[in-house]
Length: 268
Image 1 (cartoon, rainbow, N blue to C red):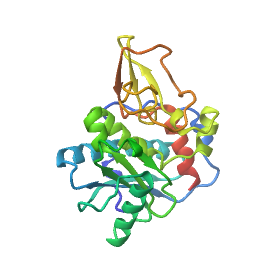
Image 2: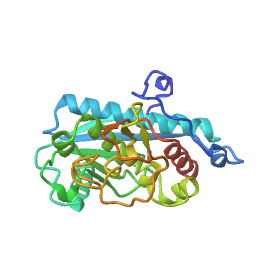
Image 3: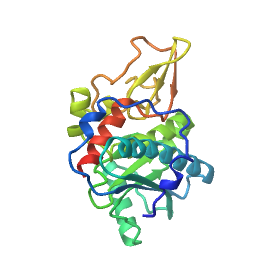
């Protein structure tokens, strides 16, 4: 993929990423080869252009934070490249089960020669009534031959709002950039969701949720998100310590997320 190092300073996140912690542990004695964190965002045809462009921007800013931090903390040159990929024809992506989403997306990428083995492929699907597939999913990592993640934009747009949609897209990409092995030294446990943070709002009544905590900050239906997540959850890297009156979302990444993703990128 082409370098976008010249653009790193030009793309700013909607909220600044917090400084990472434990950065010294990500350094190695030897200088590793340069790398580019690549992500291709695809969609099904029913996702509107405006929504697609917004989600691509959110993913770009999320991955930028990961790459900039890793470039600073590791003894290697880390760049990033997020692209707006192709639109899948109607009926190509099957959304009745999680397995079907992964399989049909992978089959389409392979059949059309769109699978980049060096990038993570995020498919945006439109299944607002298909709770069985949840808000998204991921099964593999950028190291492994063009892995597939998906975000159920149809559900988050209908039941929540744009901020939740954007965070869940970033959330599923982040699962491809970190493993439990890398989370454990940072937070003392292997749950990737716990790398996220719930930050007190300025009024002392609300809470702001970062991407990996999104859909997990409150596990009841109709809480922080209308559909709560069903994956692992212990204790977030930062939490408010009270029951919020309202919820907000930011795709600024938590220090723990930055530290753990740098660890992963330092190993591949």
